[in-house]
Image 1 (cartoon, rainbow, N blue to C red):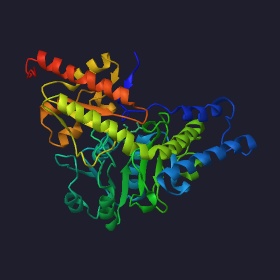
Image 2: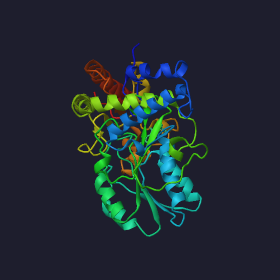
Image 3: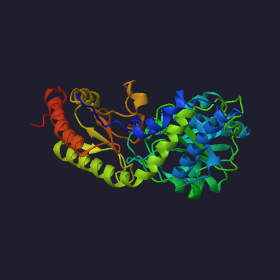
Image 4: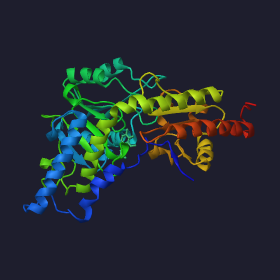
Length: 387
Ligand code: PLP
């Protein structure tokens, strides 16, 4: 059975062009970019090209890109690296809806002597900016706020937030792992000092990421060792993956306009059809400010996990929230932070599309999902039959 993959916020298919670009750099051109000989030198040039391609996607200077192993490493580097450079400041501000890469890190730091403020969100998953202003104090070292939420797709007003943060002279980190490649980002006009991204969310392989570091931003490297990445991230460069990330960035820039047109149109059709065909269902999060590829829908009186299992039998891959927490069966911390009632949290399903999602796949999902919800409601002892 062919898989209809609607879990692109968990990870994406590696673009065939990316694979082609990477392959020669495993067994043919396998030199070390730091070597003095020309075999290594040609690799160094390819790494430089990849850095330039990624810089074009972010509209920044290539020297502001530091390659890392993943989004989690970028987040850790940004937060720990800032704290280590501002040792007299012990306060971190973040939000209750961050990915565990930021949330669990800040909770870990909290146990180790740092004060952490987790900003709350409203019913739509949006931040109260007044709360942010009120919590910044002289001890605040860093504000770390995500660009777009991985579960609901809700986009925060990042530049408004950044204007507040920068007016107080504080370092502003943004986890943009879900935003890069889906919406336009322009670092030349941004207030962000440090921005995390991850290749596997936009058709590069898993295990490669980057941290954008605005010129002049002080941070202490997380990985200490050799002089790679101008001393900002030690360790021999993952050359094939860096080349893959560069190619994925080039393709993302080419296809960016499709995200807000083709992908968004498919998402909206899917969402509207499901809301119409399934009574007692609703979208979680601010529908007007969302990633174009994501919908989080709650179906009352059913378990999201049960829907996912039956969808999987029909060849449809979706998720009940973040891939990192779905194994734990813990109800989504994002939906709980939004005050979504318990029954709706448990009946939530996240569907996330990509530029590879076809109209036929969406039609099939619209056909298959509503009868699954109805069937589950009909057999549920607590449920409300919709027949
Ligand atoms: N931040 C966000 C918002 C994410 O969605 C993810 C992955 O799901 C990460 C960070 C972690 O990225 P990685 O899987 O590359 O470590």
